[in-house]
Image 1 (spheres, each protein chain N blue to C red):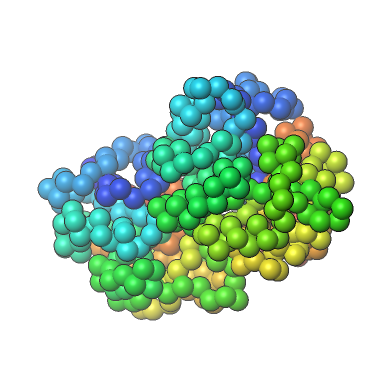
Image 2: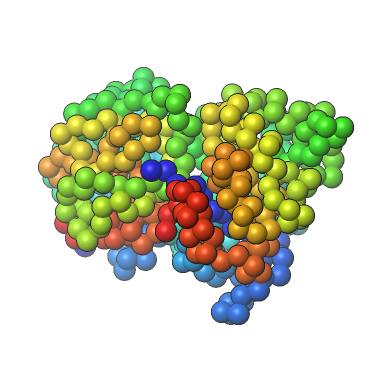
Length: 251
Length: 193
């Protein structure tokens, strides 16, 4: 049976993890490779690296990091952040990334999704969508939720599926950072209306939130950062509890 | 031991090379027919779209070479699918090693299937010391139905082949190089054949 995926997300700046992490057994808390290795051994199903660097060296640094992660880690990982061309994706996949995620660049140039899916296959193209509710309507936002667009979340999600996205990583800006749970109503609607996997992101605070997003939100995977980085939730405990709730997981 | 990963421009081969390296072996990327023929083990990767991958194989002459190889050959993901007779993806004729067609998942499941599923009905020395129901990582939209050459099965809507074998030819729909310690053990079993 296909299991639900648990995905820790690592923010990367200039080749280093950004947010503080609370791992006593970590020699270098800023080393993404070491952190990735620990997560894979702890039972993470997949990893996401989100690059937030803004330097000119960005592309090269990220490509080098991907190579180092691929050398060490034996579970799949996705790389996102600032990816805007076929060339960007080509080097990341060649260096060992399993999937890439595109966000703002897809909104600015939707044809990019068709090009990437055509060249590399839908299976490695994740489209990340950030959205929040404005007057009751879910609107897609750019630049980490700072810039609103006119796009409706559900319309845009359907469009990216039609253009060849292999899965959607949906972050609710209303829930992100609140630790109050995922945006399950919107997630369930996405999951029902679309026929590609949906990754839930934004709002994880406790184990019950994960149970809820798989049951009520019909999510295929759940992504979180701080609850894992600060050891508020151990992946093994989380998966045991999911299993108790009849949610299929890899244990 | 000389291990060749066939290099025909198919996506993520770096990960396979690294996985073999973690097992203490060294793999070489090559598209040279003589070098491939002389290898002890051949890995046939494949990520991307079937018809364009097949076009590359034809252009490089590998289409004829691969079915004639005598040493153990392991096709991974699209590599396995291309070793079948035909795939619906891009209406593509395959290498005809495994006597089966490859078809698209129906609409009753999400496509692609992405994630960790279980393998059962294990039948080959490829799965030595691997228990039934172990988890492996898959990402695919097309599948090979269960036939005589099936050596592992998984269920996603229907029950289908997650591994195939005929003589010296092996194929896995899953990615052993991305399937944690279970995948590494399967890869090691192949290298020890």
